[in-house]
Length: 390
Image 1 (cartoon, rainbow, N blue to C red):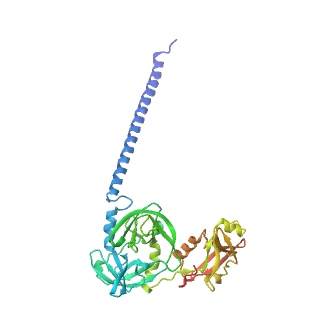
Image 2: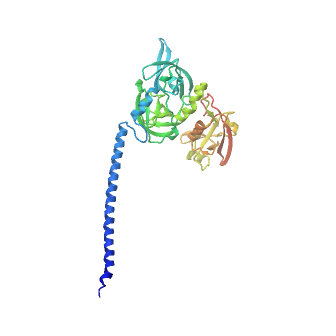
Image 3: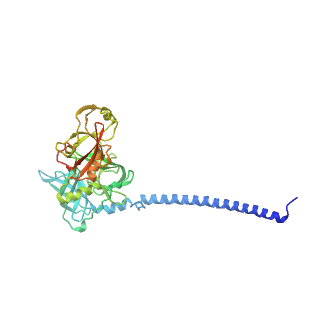
């Protein structure tokens, strides 16, 4: 027996509602998928437009374009001429680059650009040339400050950025005078940070920036800029077998510039903090020879007599061994921490001293001595002129 029509009606209505909801869901799903596809397509187009704008130098949300960077910096950059007295009077000896630091006429460049000069000239973008005096030099950071007397309006100080914020792979720009070709802009990326390079006095300059932007002889002393147009380094050296650029350049970090330059302006010199130790990074071979499980840290092979390290009680090595083809003095203390920060290798120790400490500071050193952990305190001194010890 079939159900009365009045009882079947709710069933029909329920089935109809389900069908309507099913159709509506399918329609909404289709519209959602189509909208999503359109949004993806639109985003791709926007990304493409943004990339094109960046290539055209019109800028993007991460910074400004290459052309705007150049326009901002060109009047701050100068060519530097090192002159020495010869048979015919003052003669060109070396050329480099520099940039304006302040409106008082101070210009930053590399120490090696003006080293040994009998006279220095700087040439501005508008073609005017001025005699410059050397306000101060520092061979340990390879920085120098020049002083020119000119109108304040001609001096366009740069903006110094924070080099510690640099990331491997980000865009950078170098401006200089490669082979005497002034105000040349090259572009590249940060290849690596935290490199240590030898200074002219035998010490290491820690924290250097490795770049792949083309720099060549004549670029030395010029600014390295980030995508905001801030100076984050001073171009200083290249790694090359031929003397020409081969894809590896180096720049002194702006954070070191900020520490050194004010002292050079005020007193003509900068006092670097000094511990007075020399040694080598720990390796598995050295650790094995010393019967130690640790393969990290800095092995002290020698200490300077009456230096801060010796006064703090740090002990040097007492036995010479040939390890991995090199002569190593073993048996000394192994520095593993400075003020609680790990020291995995020499660069860690140098970075902390150079960027965060000053002469007179007391530092806490964690060391391993014959397998035992010991804490010592050292009162940092002023780095002497000698080049035989770090």
